[in-house]
Amino acid sequence: MTIPVGDAHSHTNPVRGLGAAKIAEKFKESGGWFMAIVSLSPWAYGIEFTGIESYRSSLDILARECMEAEKAGVKTACLAGFHPADVDRLIDKYRMKPEEVLELGLRVVEMIGEGCREGFPDGIGEVGRQHYKTTAERVLISELILERAIEIARDNGCLVHMHLENAGPITARLVDIAVGRYGDSELKKRLVFHHMKPSHAVYIDKLGYPSTVPGTPELLRNIVGRIPPVYMLESDHIDDPMRPGAVVYPWVMAEHVQRLARKAGEEYMYRVNVDNIVKVYGVEPP
Ligand SMILES: [Zn+2]
Ligand SMILES: [Zn+2]
Image 1 (cartoon, helix red, strand yellow):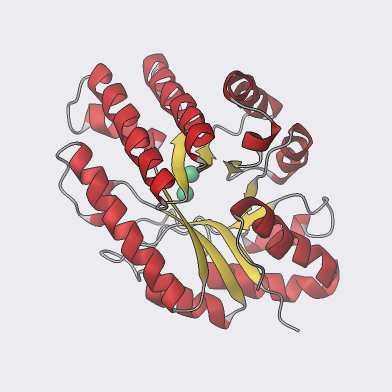
Image 2 (spheres, rainbow, N blue to C red):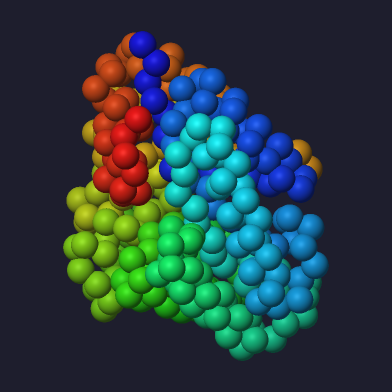
């Protein structure tokens, strides 16, 4: 039988890539039932950067993409954010002052929070800290935007997808200290550690947070059945043929889930691909 596969963190790009309609169609053919679609930075969609308006335009594209995926028969959660790499790009390429970038990032996550309260999008993402070396003040700017996003998530019922540095238990501990100032165990359930190493997923679960691990064929082979099913899978597919950063195609991930289900057991795969998704995203199971 076919295991329903959930992609808990993915991107679609109707301007440069396939777009949500095609992706959802291919994903569904391989068993895909759910996809969390996370918006890209405005320039990835070819939007000229003019300030907060550009992020508002990204939000419009995200809304259309989520509708397309739903039309193709895949359930969605939709998240829009302010990626930590935007902090560097806005300073280096768009020549903004660090203080202007901080101000913009805070306004963007506030705008998204207002949306969450009104019903779209479902959450803020990606926000977090750079996974590469950058200057101290840029990391701090990113951290403050992340903390504001957590506060907004508490007040508006948003999810958050956190892009972090993957430095081991300290990564989760640093977030947990910040969350302790804003929320409780109920809020934690909506704060997703995205792109985590499988070994950290177990630790993060113990702290009370959900996480996603990349569903690459190699990683899947190594973790499925070996670590407890406390994580969700993500493709983190960026849908841009010009950028080789695509981790894995969602439909390739889904095909591997089907293959590995024989080894790991259907129950294990259901926990990862259905139960955990239903718990975090509040969607009806397939
Ligand atoms: Zn990320
Ligand atoms: Zn991503």
